[in-house]
Length: 341
Image (cartoon, rainbow, N blue to C red; front, side, top):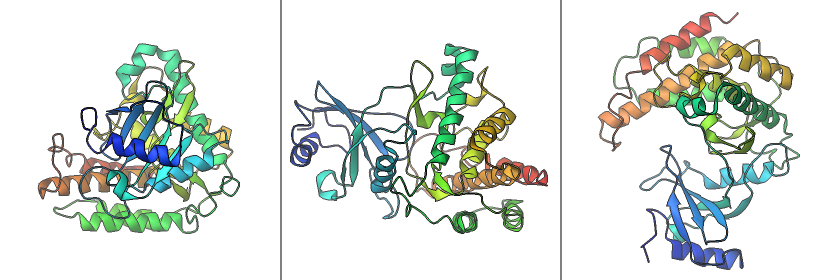
């Protein structure tokens, strides 16, 4: 029956699978709604009138075999359960594509607000906005303090040579999306490679840490960190740098991300860096390199979307001007690296 089934989620098949694997979990008929936001994995809230859960699966259509690995998200959240990092309780992972047409997992539903815009933060006021942003930084510190081995994630990635592999990966993606001249792009990559700093103590890295990827409660505390598809073991300063790069949204015309950091009361970049450094005890003296690399990575991502759009591989609205900000990101990356001592 499809009367309440959103695209990509056959509720009768989901119910049958849950009854087999977790008998007694579901008490009544399931209903579902799609959670809007993002252009990546599909997320649904599913309920039976008593309990609520969240189901995550890859997007519809063709997906690269190595992309959208549900088991990765499931594993890292399962490992972080019981640590100071707030994550939803994981319920079930299904790697059999015959059930829903793709692998998926189920986790508990967590109450909280994903603040996605400056307007939303403006409604709670400057004092609460600062508290929310500070909680965001403090939660990142907690994540980077987790011992991967103790969390059962000692083999979750390869920290050795992490930055070198990251540079190589994103350069390869840039080369695969070239359709026009991008002044300064190769120069930025080469300068990043030449100035690559030694990494500090490795940690679990979220990979896309920002305010709209966490849930916040009425007491302005983070109740859950979500969207772990980019997580690995690596250099924690890449998380910090991406958080800072996102905060430069308006400066570099990065319209694809939230403008929450421009809300009154949100801490400045220097305040964010200072809070992270003081609470984590990590050396952030080379952070400009990491921020420059974050701009390079974002430029490659946008150029890839632009390339797929002009070649007819991406459908939907909102992609027309996606390539306009690439040059500015490259220029800002080069400028930031000039400040590196």
